[in-house]
Length: 343
Picture 1 (cartoon, rainbow, N blue to C red):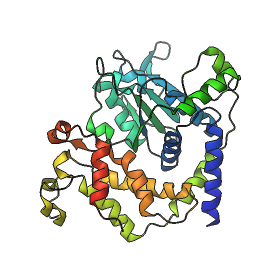
Picture 2 (picture 1 turned 180 degrees about the vertical axis):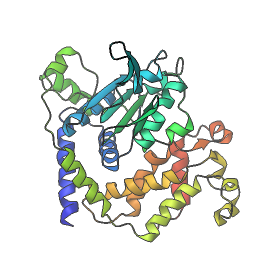
Picture 3 (picture 1 turned 60 degrees about the vertical axis):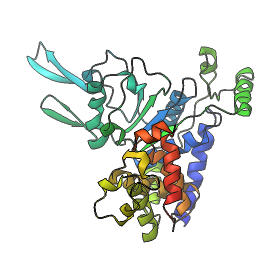
């Protein structure tokens, strides 16, 4: 119990430190911290100017980890990310020149602006924690954390992420507009020469930004992960997590599942392809960390429900019927949560 209480206090300290740079956006901040503890990757989706890049930089600053920002563009090459072999004339040999992916925290800015061959260069890095250049396989730094951003309203000149890559993101966070009060607070910070900005600021605003304290260094991060590992998950809660993931799969994809007797009833008719067992693992990890945020030593059904939207929203493919009715993944997942009984 003492371990979970100390972890909750440390997480609250990290929240306060990030609040020096970010106004509001509590869900995004909690999601970033959750993925950092879980050792997963994050896909951030939101229109420009909502502090996505600023939040990632602030997160890297409070951890003291090595940070690299990669701007994805249509003319980017895979070697621009991973590195390449360079001929050394004097030595008469090829040497490896490492790319920017060799860092602890990677910001893949506007990841959907690069073609598929560039996006796929991250697949091995995100799943295996390594990069192959020529005949050599090089381990990436540990921890390794990819945060990718994309703009949901622009489609011209963009390339949709393949399902295989989407599934490698632990969570997809939707970054909303700030409330009126939060946006007024942003203006107050700017006029008062104080640093926290939730919207993109100019050069003068950035120069006034005070340094953040390193509150989540490597020992602190390891202690949070150790605390999350001892959070108790009851068998009924574990079955609930698996049931939610299974309910996202059409009956034809679940042979032998008695829930398939509902046929096309419930949420099934709105889903073409559902979440894989990787989603169940992600729910398991995130629900435990959600309990850690509250200083509890056990996972509740509410923790699972809180984690369900960010964990599942990028892992299901909607049917034509869902699109015809104007449904989005969050709406369908909400129906799944209502359809599957909680313990």
